[in-house]
Amino acid sequence: MENQNYVSPDGVLYNKDKTTIICYPAGKKGNNYKIPDGVTEIGSIAFSRCSSLTSVTIPNSVTSIGSGAFNGCTSLTRVTIPNSVTKIGWNAFSGCTSLTSITIPNSVISIDWYAFMGCTSLKSITIPNSVTSIGKNAFGYYYDNGYKKINNLKIYCYSSTAGEQYAKDNGFDYMLIDKFAHAKVNGAKLGGRAADALKINWTKNASADGYIVEMYQNGKWARVGKITNNSTTTFRKAGLKASTVYKFRVKAYKMCGTTAFYSAYSATVAARTNPSVMTGAKLGGRAADALRINWTKNASADGYIVEMYQGNKWVRVGKVTNNSTTTFRKAGLKASKVYKFRVRAYKMSGKTALYGNFSATVTARTNPSIMKGVKIAGKAKDALRVNWTKNASAQGYIVEMYKGRKWVRVAKITNGNTTTFRKAGLAKNTTYKFRVRAYHMSGKTALYGNYGSVSGKTAVK
Image (cartoon, rainbow, N blue to C red; front, side, top):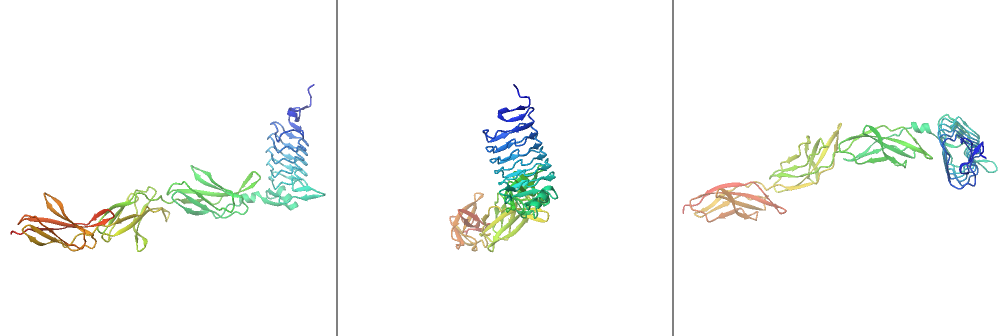
C-alpha cells in the first residue's frame, strides 16, 4: 500500500509533497548529494552522521536548516548555503570537522546555538549584516572536557552588527567588510611607459589578498589584470597603441572562502603611451659639408628630434615640429668625415614631451671638398699639363676632358699627394677643357667632391 505521509526516492526520506527532507541514510553510498528543487526545509538531523558525504548542494528553495541537520558529517568539506535560507538551526553543522570555510548568505537572520561548533578545520566565516541573532558558541568552539576555542579562526563581518559583537564578545580575530570596502587603494600613479605599454603602481594594501586592475575601453571599464599577491604593487599593460591616452583604476580584494570582497577604487590614472620607434632612417643625400637624413613618417608623432654623435656623446642637432617633414640636412660638416645620426619621435602630452625609441643609427661620410687651384701649368704642341692644389680630404683625383660633346675620364690618380697630370696626344694650337674632382673611398663606394675646371690651348709648334 502506498504511504500517505512519506516518499523515499533512492532511499532518501521526504514528506509526501517533498518539501522537507527528513532523512538521508547514514550508510548510503556516494560522496555528493544534490537536494532537489522545491525542498523548503532540511529537517532536524536529516543528514546526521553521514560521514561519507563530502559535498551537499542545497537549492535556493530551502529557507530553513533544522537542528542537527548535518551534525557529525565529518567528511563534508564544502556546502553552499543559498540566498533563500533565513535560519540555521541549533547544532546544524556541529562536528563537521573537515569544513574549512563558510559564507552565510544575506538572507539569514538567525544562527542558533552551537550551529558550527566542533568545526575544527574552520578558518574563516563570513557573516552578513542581515544576521541579527547569533547563539552561544555558534562557531569557533569545540568540546573537550569543556568548551574550547578554535585557533586561527577569522570572522568577516560588518560594523555594529551581530557578527562584530560575537567576534568581540568571544575574542576572535575579525575584519570589517564595510571598512575594507570603503578603504580605497592609495598611491595609484604612472610607473613607466613605452610605445606599446603603460605601467601602473600603487601603495600596498596590508589587509588585501590581491588587486584587480581595470582599464577603460570601448566605453566601459574592463578587468585587465588580477594580482594574487598583495606585495605586488605594479602592473604593466602591454599591447597598447602608440601616443594614445589610456585610463586605469585599481581595487583591492579579500577572499573569504570562495567569496571575494572588494575595496573602493583608486583614483583614476590617465596616461599616454610614447610614440612608436622610428623606422626607415637612412642617408638621403650628401655634400662636402653636409649630410641629409631621411626617415619614414611616424603617425604617432608631433615631430622629431635628430641627434648627431660628437665629442663622445649624442647631441641634439635638429628639432622638426611637423610630423610630415621626414628629412633633415645637417650642414657645417667637415669633408670626407664619418658622422653618425639617429632620430626619435616626440609627442606632447600637455606640457610634457614624450619620446619614442631611437631609429637605427645612420652612419655616413661626407664627400670630399671642392677642388681648388686648378690651372694649366705647362703646354706643348701635343700636350697640356693640369695642376691643382692638394685636397686634404681626398684619397685621389679624377681628371676629365671634354671631347665629343661630353666629359670623358682621362686619368685616375690614386695618390692624394699627386697634384698634376699631363695629357698628351693632343692637336697643336687647339683649346681643350679639363676638370678635376677629388674622391674618397667609403668602404667599396667612391665618394666624389665637386669639380674644379680649367681651359687651355696647346702650343702652335
